[in-house]
Length: 195
Length: 195
Image (cartoon, rainbow over all chains, first blue to last red; front, top):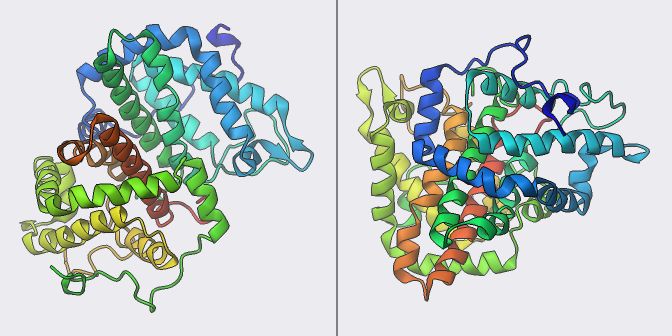
């Protein structure tokens, strides 16, 4: 699947508004997360390991969402779970994994993450032309899903790591990167000026 | 330090409004976090290990905050860092650790966590009678600090665990519990209806 064939994927789209997160803000955020150059390198090492298994990882995550009705509700209309919506989001979810592991945290990446944040709230459903699904993904579940998204990647890292210490280091870098993303997405949720 | 001597600590105060999180909501949230009975037991095992070292843990965290001006700013007035404010929050922060490790996630605990969330935004500074400090703790740093709060407890767990697997299991339970707390605190930050 080439990136351009992923519906709604807009990384690098110059028509997106720039992120309001300045270079200094972003440096502070990474500093608070203890996310440094070593983590960037570890994420890219993890890319080579996890990259070929992204569909298997998505199977795990979609299995988790699909087995909890209160999570599946975000993708459901009164007619039930919307298969087309789930499939389109899945393609972008896979690309999100690849983009995190590429760890190219550029202004283009920041602009697109701001857009992804908005798509969980004010523009939810629009990108995929969905009608009748809930207008917002509840934020409490965004926070909660950090844990399974962190934990379930570990077997994939283990399978390709040099040793247990290498797997652990890549796993810590992954957690920092997921938290970084969640911090950025939260901008779309919080009250004006509280981000 | 007895709990009643901690200024502003209101766990169990029946004059606090009840949390809007219902028992079913809370069960769902724990389920999304993969937080189960085994984690509750592990947190209580960690309490026996970390409990006697809470002040050392706070030294680490306060050292971290104090070495980052953008974090220290939340505790500062135009006159500089407010030592009394920092000291009062520190006492509650220590009790927060003890309360998480007690893992008594009761309606009283939920009500107090809702209050703690509000104290980061709409009622920040009021509890401690502070004047001139910023009116809000930026949410991006709340998310980011999950990582150091997760990572820096590990040496304390290692020092008292039966073995590495036990330390790791307690550490995972701690991460889930910190995320649970952050999910609850986020209610005070997000737009109405988006929690």
